[in-house]
Image 1 (cartoon, rainbow, N blue to C red):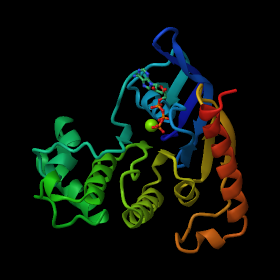
Image 2: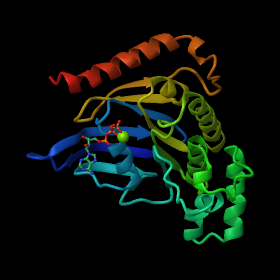
Image 3: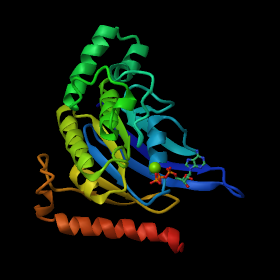
Image 4: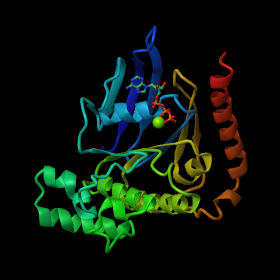
Amino acid sequence: MSGHINVSDVTLKFAGKTAPLTVLDQVSLTLSHGEFVVLLGPSGCGKSTILNLVAGFVPPDSGTISCNDRPVSGPGPSRGMVFQQPTLFPWLTVLDNVTFGPRMAGVPRPEAARMAREWLERVGLAGFEQHFPWQLSGGMKQRVALARAWLPNPDILLMDEPFGALDAQTRIMMQELLRDAWLSTGTTVLFVTHDVEEALFLADRILIMSARPGKIVDEVVLPFGQSRDIETLAQSPGYADIKQRILHLVRTEAKKYINPI
Ligand SMILES: Nc1ncnc2c1ncn2[C@@H]1O[C@H](COP(=O)(O)OP(=O)(O)OP(=O)(O)O)[C@@H](O)[C@H]1O
Ligand SMILES: [Mg+2]
């Protein structure tokens, strides 16, 4: 089945000033095809590192990572990534930014452009194809990044706080856009955020990580179903209790940095 992720007993150390720093300690997680899973945890606990491992940017010291039942040995087009900053090429137009990957992979320019126009329309950027990144707002740039990541039709999308730098209103619009795109594509999404409300709106399942060395300490399966309205979700049965439980867990872990035990 496509879009399956398996991280099993992964440990990763980085060189520290005196001794190696254990960033991830026997982390295991599994995502099924089409699932939307959010990773929540304090700053520095290793969330981005997990995405980088699944993307194939870094290898683990021990443990295994596989996607679609194949070991990950490096980056590949079946796994798209969206970073906190949009990372667009400043010298390319919106259309050329979005089509860059497929063109490099040999997709003819007209075909790539046709697919890109579909995605640009979907993210509300029809008519901006010939704009350059410096002519776009932060939210628009992140829409371009979303279209670019989704264009090659990846099995898996890895998203590292993609809306972290946006204002509250733009952020909500982007969350709605992302959920709609996810519902219509069925792509497996592993999404990192600090924001509990964002996690509650987007996720099927939330994984909560401990302070460094990062481990998955809890898992919350959300009972809110597929169709969610961002304005009324907070009135859903169970929402307040789940939010409070998650906030408590995340705050408990975050405090360990201030009062290490
Ligand atoms: N390439 C690297 N070399 C050395 N140390 C690294 C490297 N990448 C990450 N680290 C360290 O690993 C730890 C986890 O980093 P990571 O970026 O995964 O955290 P995070 O949970 O994403 O934090 P944030 O929420 O602030 O983005 C940090 O202590 C960081 O300094
Ligand atoms: Mg990070």
